[in-house]
Structure formats: structure tokens, C-alpha cells
Amino acid sequence: MLTALELGTYLQSIRKTQHLSLRKVNELSGISYSHLNMIEHGTRKVTPALLQKLAKLYQMDYLKLYQKAGYLEDPQQNGIPYYASIQDYIQHSTPTEILSLEDFSLYKSYFAIPMMDDSMLPSIWKNDIIILEESSDFVSGDILLLCISPQSYLIRKVKKTDKGIVLQAFSEQYEPAFYTNKDFSTRKVKVFGIVRQLRRKF
Image 1 (cartoon, rainbow, N blue to C red):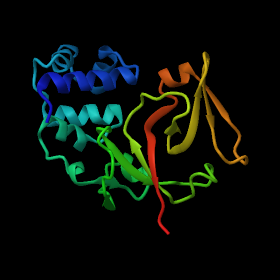
Image 2 (cartoon, rainbow, N blue to C red):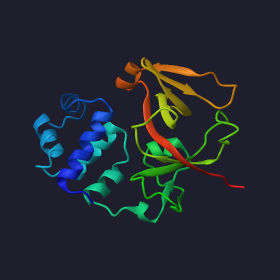
Image 3 (tube, rainbow, N blue to C red):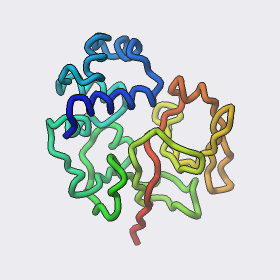
């Protein structure tokens, strides 16, 4: 459980990584600017209803915000939630199972989904279990889970350039794609997580 100030700082960092101003959040969520400002500075407690609005806007699992605010116990203390598909994760469906933690002491928030295609062969097979850190703060060389358009999700290795970002599949059957910095700032391209580990079922 985070203190009010820690939770406010966390919410502010999420907002900034998505390139949203307080005014824009006010416009999109209906939560007043002054109320948002007080929440981010830890001077006003955020209610579960407001957390749910912010989670929807920031495309986060509202249950994770509830846990950080102390409204729920953290189920991830006992494992990693594994979803049947990326859509189940996005829609906050119940995980199909809880995976063992192994070594995840460095990562605060993570989830797992099955690999959806063969674009990352030979390193990642279709249906491999991909464990991701829920973060949009990435560097060149990271493998990311991205949303390119509504209902279009990709796992790709990224390379940052001055003008934007190149997304590369490992399989030669898939062409590299380039997106500008503006594509990211306008949320045309959204980052859901960074691949941290793979598990394979035989």
C-alpha cells in the first residue's frame, strides 16, 4: 500500500509517460483540475470511483490501482497473473492461472499473456508465455507489447532514433515498421509492457 503522496506521485508519472496534461485528463475524465492536482500532490485521498476512471483513461487494470491505494490486497505477492489473451488483460478479465514468481524482485507490476503469432521466431514461439513488466519507459533493444490501432497488438523489438522508433520482428517474413515520436505522443502507438521473461510449455 502506498501513502497518499506516493500514490499521487505514481499517478503523475503514469500521466506524464502518456504525455497527458492535467487539463487533458480533466477534459477526458470529467475529474476537476484542482481535484486531480491535489490527488497528485497527496493532499486529497483518491476514491475507488476516481481510481477506476483514471485506470480506464490510462489503460491500466483498475484492480492494480486499488491495491496500490490499499483498497485490495495484492494477489501478485503469490504469483504472476496469466491471461488467455491480450484482450482478456485489457478488459480486466480474470486470469486463467497464477504463475510462480521466480526472480521478479526488481519489477513492481507484471502480467503474462501467450504469444499471439510467429513474428518473433525463432526466439519466441507462438503460445510461449510472455511475462511483461507493465511499463512504457523503454530503451532501444527492449521487446515491447504495443497497440498500433484499436484491437491490433504486436510484440516487437524496438530501436530508438532521433525521429522516431523502428519496430522489428525477428522473423524475416515481417517487414520493419517506423513510427514517429509524434505517433507516440498522440498515443497512436501505445506501449503496454516490456518483455522480461519467457516460459515455454512442452
